[in-house]
Length: 30
Image (tube, rainbow, N blue to C red):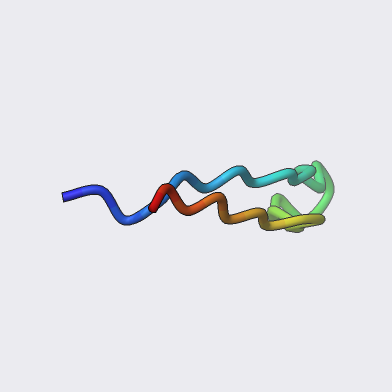
């Protein structure tokens, strides 16, 4: 069962150790 391919572009803030998601792309294969 394949839902879709996700491509996440993010950067990690080293001071607070949190991940900020810049862009979330969903490429669904029909």
